[in-house]
Image (cartoon, rainbow, N blue to C red; front, side):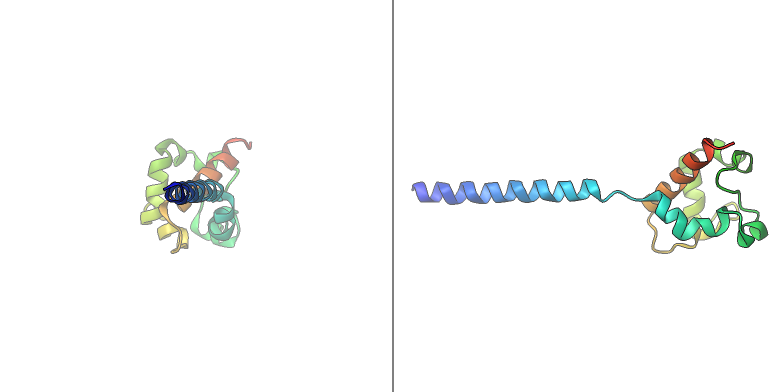
Length: 116
């Protein structure tokens, strides 16, 4: 009888430990908005030739974003995901999720509000 309790307790302990490890991995797997920006968004928003051609607002230039930021984060994310307001759909990042796009937009907003 004691042997059965030990097995049950061991199994419960393993389940709890597995859940704790799994939860810790989820917390450390944060979306890197800056990396997404650098990999995809910077092609237009760093002010290079493509950005100049498309008229993309430049990161770090609040005046460039004055008509966009007041609409709010949720609206900006929607525009990028759906390709509205002259934006490429998903910022030309087909593998990006809505959460990835949100992280990139947050990075742009944070990098822009503190400059100038």
